[in-house]
Image (cartoon, rainbow, N blue to C red; front, side, top):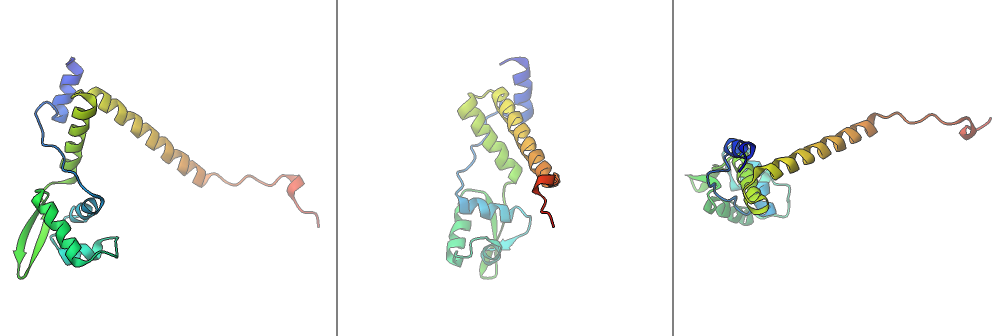
Length: 150
């Protein structure tokens, strides 16, 4: 590895083997986003915050159980039910995903990853700037030929 790659790798923690990010389904990811808000929540409370109004309580309980078995949630028995809280932060999951991408696509070299991320950020900010520009651009005045004569 060249010096820059080595330093960036150390900075990003990619030189030491990191655990792979767990595979998360769409529903599991939605639940994690709810739990990452920082509160201890029961299955019923998570269900109430879910955007999927078709889910049953038993489906939500199963989803929470899967996340618990993946070591992504802590749970504590409170009365007759469990309350859940995040065992890993959003930042930790992002770091694991970036590590996976670095290993799988970049053969452990963070340089292409950083270059790609830089390109992504540039495109994203240009898209945002274009959208903002489009929103504040005043409508062009009507030309004299378009006006209706009285």
